[in-house]
Every structure is written in C-alpha cells, then in structure tokens.
Length: 117
Picture 1 (cartoon, rainbow, N blue to C red):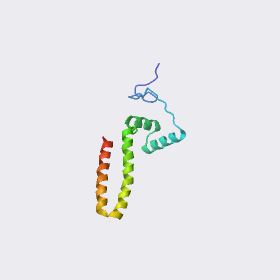
Picture 2 (picture 1 turned 180 degrees about the vertical axis):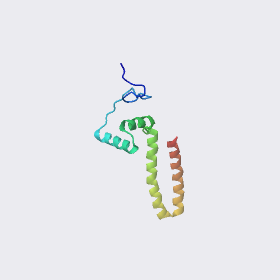
Picture 3 (picture 1 turned 45 degrees about the horizontal axis):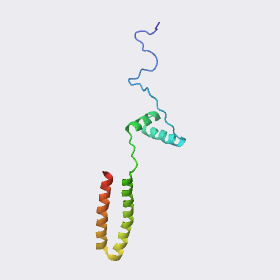
C-alpha cells in the first residue's frame, strides 16, 4: 500500500520529540496583547513561546503585608524629617544637623533590614 521507496523520506512535518498536549486559554485586552506581542518580537520568539517562558521562569512579587506597608509609611515620614534636618542645618548649624541625620540614618537602615527579611 505504501509507495515510499527505500531512499526517499516520508513527506510531511517531522514528529516532535516532546509533544505539547495541554492547551490553556488566556484572555487579554487588545492593549495587553499588543504589549505581549511586542515583547515577544523584541525577544525574537513567537508569542506563545514568550508567554510559556515568562509563566515558567517569571516571578510575581507578592503584595506588601500590613507590617511592610507600615514600615514604608515610616520611611515616607522620615523623608519629611530629613527635609526638616536641612532647615535645622541652616538655622542651628551643621553639627546639630549631622546628629539628627545620623539618628534618622540608623532608623532607616533598621527599617530597610526589616523589609529585606
């Protein structure tokens, strides 16, 4: 029945070593899909391969916990205090401002270490 001679190859697409069997559907807005397509072009791969690689290798950062958001608020408050240190340096002199600055710097370092851990 087969008309394939010994020296000839079988016509058609070759069989893949690893077959992708499962299909997962994702919905995008037009704008989102345009962004994904452009990023895939920049990476030099097709869109489905880009989505596959980013979902497997990508990382989603979790939202800040309540404690972490309080630390961020404290850091923002200290930024206001640093502006006050600048005003103090003009009024009371540089030495007094340096003392305030060192105190705030150690507090900021401690808060950043809490955020990292």
